[in-house]
Image 1 (cartoon, rainbow, N blue to C red):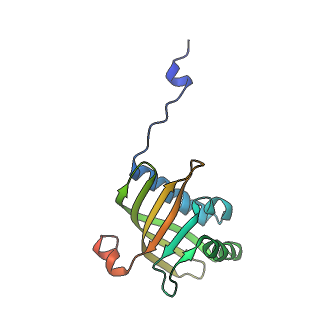
Image 2 (tube, helix red, strand yellow):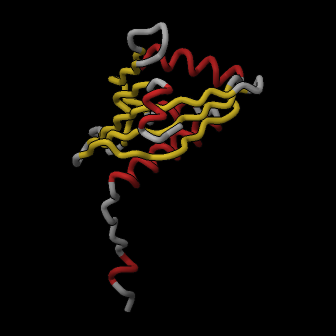
Image 3 (cartoon, rainbow, N blue to C red):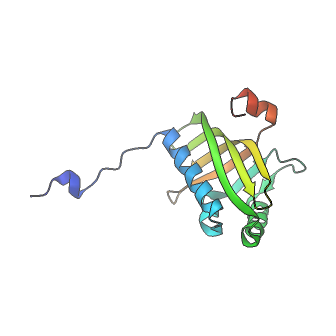
Length: 145
């Protein structure tokens, strides 16, 4: 007779660090693959991005519009994240800081510290609801640069 454990695998609760890392891995993979639908499934419709020079805040619509064009035009070569500093968490939210590295096809690279707040939405998907681009001084202060 088969062991009950092998018939019904138990899903162990992930730690906040594992949740954040899984989100970063999925975000980097889908952006690098230029898979717009999969990438924007990781971003909440209620997202607000702050800290981008020249903009008070960027909405989902603004971010999606710019990204869709960049994905289609092949501007983006790759996205990766380096480091993970957990800031706060509860059962449905995880806030962390990381270094985001965006490689563009013209050979340029943008490296910036970001503070990210992801939330478990009603459909069971963790999505970013808030992102803040940090200054280089702040990124250095928290050990990302």
